[in-house]
Length: 336
Image (tube, rainbow, N blue to C red; front, top):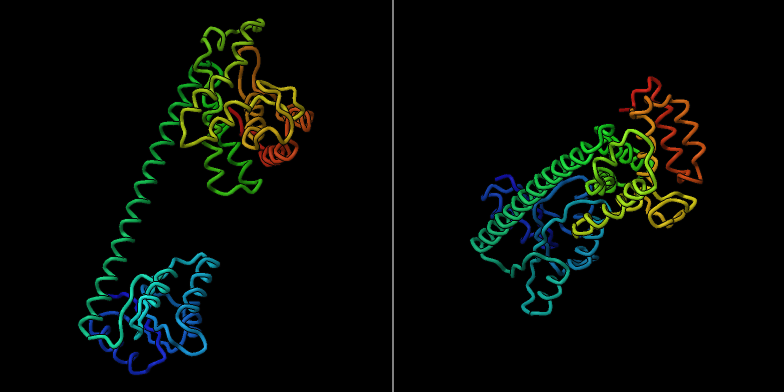
């Protein structure tokens, strides 16, 4: 056993007895005489469990517990289980301690075997909880990985409908995630916008292949079918209640910042941030991908088009980040 047990009590006899009993069990025991010393000790040392007296001079166990939890929250440290030790034989003290988040109570004076068994059982429970949490985290990550793989496969299937958009959804997702990262989005939001980007064109599933792959100019009826894919995509994704933000990219990535886009004619800040980011990434990839009627557009022309669209087609903040990404791509490798 290498578990680290910290005992806090102003009674020297209690400290000596606790150390003698618990050390024989193989635990690494540290004895401290006040709550202030405990808080200072934890600044540089770890603990698996804290046994703490309630009645102590200067700062009692309750106040120490409150300050401990505040410190853990502030620093992001993992909560250390606390067990109160007290000679008080009343329900009020026990209720107060448990309401503050104490794991258990030990009455003083305690029998050596009782202390040993209580601490051993509590540490076993803590270890089990940590193992269970680890297993849950592992399974969650596995499920997230599987979900991402499924979504990427679906995105590839969507792109396969169009002879000229191979890998389009993955590239838009990657560009969008990078824009989100540079803008300062959290890692979770970056991952979410990647997923949103992957599915932004999911509505094209319902557009006939003859329309998507028509080599010439579309007539009005055909263009209306294309323009309906954001609505259709949002309808498909609205069934995924666990990820409500998915529809933001699908429905609104063709909105324009000046309000002249489709399908809803949203303007400026009314367009969700995710859709404004994807709009820039989508336009960039469209220009840097081959079509039946043209090759990849030269990089300087792409830059001009994005600059010209700032404030009208694009949110300037996200367009500027895209321009920074292009400027760094001196060999022009960021294309289909």
